[in-house]
Image 1 (cartoon, helix red, strand yellow):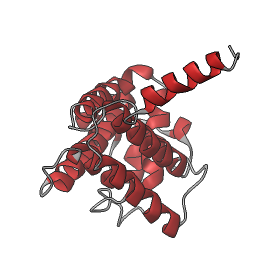
Image 2: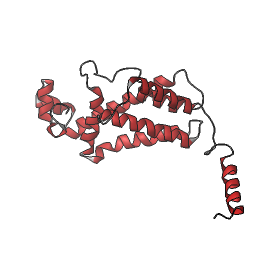
Image 3: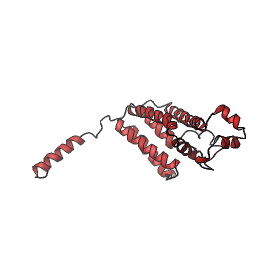
Image 4: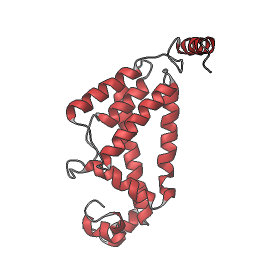
Length: 196
């Protein structure tokens, strides 16, 4: 996929690359779609293992969100096969692009993202804050994977630390304390001064 493009991903090309017969590949993956599905399943499984590892010694509120941030921005281990294939970041992009050619293949990924979102919303911190953190992380990952833009090492560490810091604030209120009262006071003052 990376070398020749997504459209060149065929069972024949996989067999040739793996030095197997086409029948040998078809024995395990009857179609190109089933092969892509298996790769997506492997990617999801890897993500879940990383999230679980990052949570091992963390039970404080926000632990799931912190694990998600760390898994995405500072993984514990390389993606499976990374030693053999140094452009592993692009594998995620390639899989997504390949699956996007057949939207049904993305359904397991959609389902997993819904599950992750529920976990984030029930993580003991503000669901709004946790979701904003998750969206920031997803955006950084996607920009990185697609090669659009990547954070420098120092800035990446600073962003990671700031996102982790935000997960430690367990305030359940959706707005800062007193924010509603300040807005009400401002509205009363404007009315008193003749502003609408």
